[in-house]
Amino acid sequence: MKKYLIGLITIIAAVVLAGCANSSATNKKTINVGILQVVPHGSLDEARKGFKEELNQKIKQHDKSIKVNYNYQNAQGDQANLNSMAQQLTQKKNDLILGIATPSAQALAKKTKSTPIVVTAVTNLKSAGLVKDDRKPATNVTGTKDLGPVDKQVKLLTTLTKSSKPIGVMYNSSEENSVLQVKMVKEYAKNHHIKLNVVSVTSTNDVASALSGMADKVSGIYLPTDNLMASSMKTIGKKAREAKLPIVTGSIEMAEDGGVATYGINYRDLGKQTAKMAYRILIEKKKPQDMPVETSHTLRLYINKANAKAIGIDPSKITKP
Image (cartoon, rainbow, N blue to C red; front, side):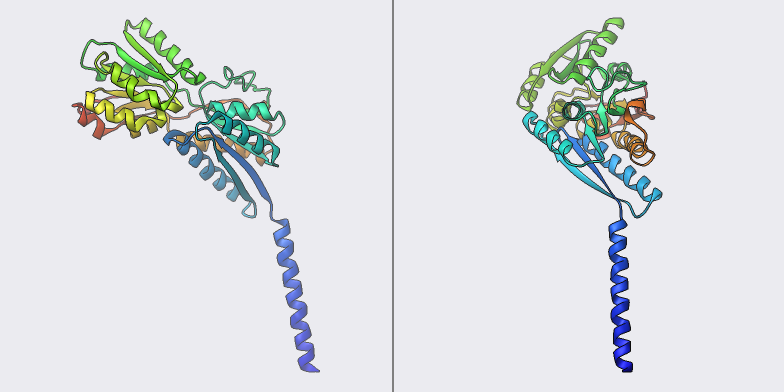
């Protein structure tokens, strides 16, 4: 009889513990976050990593029982993929979606007007049709801009050039963010009497030939924060080293991958800044339509010392514009 009671008590205890475990599992909350990235390259990858790092940390600090489930989609630069993935992410029950770069943000915004969307690595949210106004978006979209100090970047390039030839500018004319930056370059050049040689390309196949065609005609090259340029930085860097041409880029990651220098933003930090906005939406129940668009909190001079030395520039002589 005693053994029977002990066995019965053991069974009851096991059932109670199992019930508690099941109850705990049931009560554990999950936040679903979709991520849509237009193409894989250094800047956008860093923005995504920074976003996840910061959001995970802030959610953990708030409540360790909350799990963040990420649904990451990368369109690999294909517009059809981008539209299909945007459709998938907006149809699923995501609590929030992150759009990385202008094409991703626009694709998501076209698919939903209700799910909160935060974006990053977008040059101008208003001109992209994502918000009504930076101070008060009045849509389901908000986020961080990656527009760097174009004027200071061009000024930096002029200090690195060694001839009176025009400054080359290469960009993708089908990227709205790039068109805006090139317009700013032209305005700065006009005001400071700088000659330009502007070349547009629309595919990675055109980059090498376009660069070869302008190599003897320019004293240096400026590249905006352009997804096509960023994806081609290994090729661009190799060609520029062969031609002994300094390259100043719109982002630090682009300079790391093939440029000589830049004065700009760090995309991992920008991703973290975006995550803080996402946290306020997910946990503090803020609404995107009321949250002002933000710009990068920090700018810094980055020098690719190896590339600078390879084209005959002393890295120690490069200073902040």
